[in-house]
Image: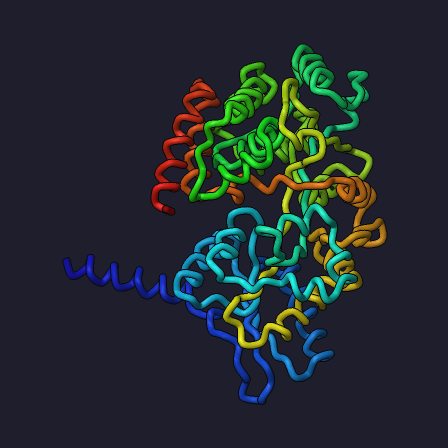
Length: 431
């Protein structure tokens, strides 16, 4: 019992340590400067170095402001944001995903409404790619600014396509024909691995946007009103499962993960892979700029969603400001610095993190494939945010677990029955 008590005390101490720091409100530092706390999600050396340099440059331009910077991992951020928000101790400026992550803070009044700042500075507001800026809007108001953007495309191995006389498909029927041709030649059409469950969400999130109207999705993605009873959700899951049932995704998909299959695709073992533009630099490094191409996954047959032809899955990573900051003007000033075009271009060139500024990604700061992909993304009116970030965590986890079972035979109807049950429990808890 004593050992158990000591162990529990150690766990508690470690938990406190994990969530300590960067939660204190802004105040004046010992030097009399305005101090702003900044919590970010890029602990890797190449990213951390860029942000540290950017902060130093900002402080040089603004000697009356001091930035206290903390940088943690993806998973730690997911846990820490919830803890800090619950305790009313969010840092002045902090990283936030789009979708439900941002919306829940907006609904609860935890983050600063930036609408007036953007209305007063139209040049700043108009500098962002519209689709990505729209993902930081809740009930018509701006609650964050995007600094990183990403869009989902189907990548293809140019050599494999050329060797098999295949054209890039533009319709669903053409896409299925390409998959059939490859499968008949004993080439796995699409690289896919789902041992860690989340990869299914990219497909289903896109297909939800194809099959379900925006107003229905908006209501269902809200924890207090989610029902997921629209028939389009079943069709979206079935469309994904059809790819698996036809053998297009290969074998033993639940025993491989995303990182394994992207290596296999890059090595020419599969013909296509669904991936985000934020990851294109990996493929350029592994295959060269001329080794791969990309296309928007075609609209499935029978898709009737009102945004079916104008929406693409993707997302922005954002910076928000705590509603309790003592220095909102200074915090906004820092966000303007980080997202001005020259700084955004530097961000992309030095880190590979694609920015969200119109014209901010070119062949001067990126490679030709990535620059072309982002030029294409300027044409999209709306972004279907990463699905696991759009919905409540309990709903997301249920989706992922049930979809993994569906890859081994569970029906689309049963998947959605599980989701509907989870959504009802979440909605009841939020009433």
